[in-house]
Length: 637
Image 1 (cartoon, rainbow, N blue to C red):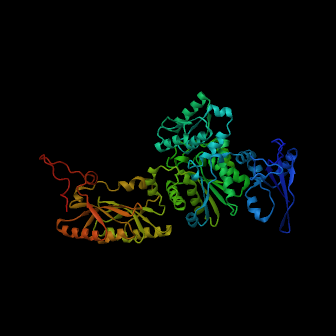
Image 2 (cartoon, helix red, strand yellow):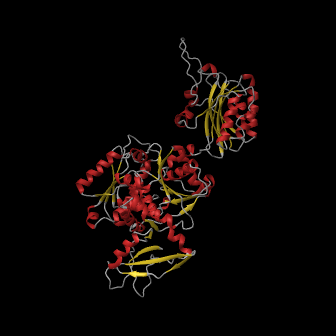
Image 3 (cartoon, helix red, strand yellow):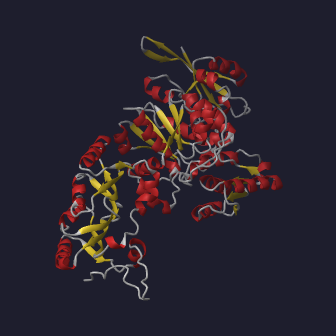
C-alpha cells in the first residue's frame, strides 16, 4: 500500500480558516494494476493523527498551503489536485513526492524550509521562467541539457525571488521602519524592485567603485522608494555603513543569502524545475555559488522531494569560499577573491547556507576563467542571450562535470542565474571564450622562408593568432591555432617538434594569455632593422586567407615583425615589417599589387609614431651635435 496526503483548505463558508481538510488517497497495487479508493475528507480535528500516520509512511505528496478557498457547490481551488493513481499521472506524482527517510536522516528541520518554499509569495513580481532545451550543449556533452532561464526575470537574475520573499514576509511594523541592503550587483536590483512593488522605503549601500551601469540600474528600479548610498572603497566598508544604518534607523536588513526567507525564495526555482520535467528523470542540477542561497534553496527542495537528483554547486576557481568551508568543516573566510565572476565573488559564505550545504550539496566544483567565458559563449549559442560570468557558472560546471565523469544520456539542468553583463567585458570574454584554441610558443630560425615552413606544419588547422618581432637568432613566436581534438593538438605539437620548432604549450599559462601575447617582441635592435618597412594589411577573413598571404610573399623578403589576431570579424588584419633591399623595391611593388588583386588592402606604417616609439630601438646622439637617423629612410610609395 502507498499512502498519499494532500493538504487543501477546503471548507464550507461558515467554517473557520483553521478547519482545513486533508484528502487522503489509498492506492493499492495488485498484479501490476493500479486502482484508486475513494478520497477521504478528514476535518482538522483528525488531521494531526492522519498526518502523523502519513509521515511514518515511505512516501507523502505535499502540495502545500493553498491561498484560495473552495466551498460546496463552488468550483474547487484550481491549485488543488486529487491523486487518482492512474498511470498517466505517475510522472506528475513522482515529481511532488516527499522522501521522508532522507529528511529524517539528513535534515530533521527540512520540513520548516519545505513549508517556507511551498508558501513563498514570489509570483507577485517574479515569473516562472522557462526550462529551455540546449541542443548544442546536449550535442557537445552527449547528454540532455536544459537551462533554467532565471535571466528572464524582470531584473534579469534570480535575486528578485529571495529579496521579494523576505520583504513580503516582514510585519507591518518592520515595513514601516524601512529596509536596508548592501550589494554591488543583482541583489541590490532585486531589493530596489521589490521595495518599489511593496511601497517600502529602502537604503541600498554600494561601494564607490561600483560600475555606473549597475548604480543606474538600481536607481531605475527604485521608483523613488530606494536611496542609493555610494560609500567605501570595497564591499566590507559599504557593509559596515549598512550595519550602522540598521542600528541608527532601525531598518531591517535584507541579506543577499544568509536568511531563511531569501533561501526559500530561491528554492521556488526547484519547484518549477520538477513541474517542467514530468517527462524526464532529472539526474543532476547545477547551481552557481556565491554566498550559497541559490544552491541550498534549490538543493533543499530537491533533496526533500527527489533525493536521487544530484545537486552540484559551482564556484569560480579564484573564489572557492564554499568549497574551502566544506573541506575545512567550518566557515572559512578567504583572504581575497577574483572579481571576474563578480556576482559570485564572496569571501565568506553564510553560517546558515553553510549548514544547509553540508546537508544538500552532493559536490562543489570549481571552474576557471576560460571555462566561464566558454560557458557564456555556449549559453549564447543555445539561447541568443549573453549571460554574465556568474550567470554562466552553472553551464561551465555542467560541461566540466559531464566530461570528467564521462556522463552520457543523462538529463542535466543548469540554472542560468543572471544576464546583467557589463558591455565593456565582452572584449575579454570573446578573447577567452574559445576553449578550442591552443596557445603555444615556438622558435624559428631568422631566415627567409621560415614562416611558411612553420605554417605548413599546422595547416589546414585554423591559425587565430601570430605574434613575432625580430630579436635575434632563433626568434620566439606566440601562436594560437584550433585543433579538432586533444589528440589532434598533440599531433601538431609532435610535428612542430620534429621540424625543429621547439613548441611549448601555453594554454594553461595565465600570464601568457593575459599579458605576454600582447607584449611579445618590443623594440628590435637598430642593427637588425636596416631597410625595414612596416605595412598593415586587411583581407577578407576566410579559411586559407593567411596561407595565401604567406605563399605570395617573395622568398627574398625577410619578415622582421608579424602580428595577426582573429577576432571573429569579417575582415582580418595583419601588421608586418619586411626587410627589403633598395634593389628589390620594384619586386615589393609587384607583391603589393598582387595582394590588392586578391582582395587585400594595405597601408604603409613606416612613419607611424607608434612604430618609432615602441618597435624601434633608439639611437644615441653623436658627438658632433647632429643626430644621425634612428633608422634608415623609409621606402615610401
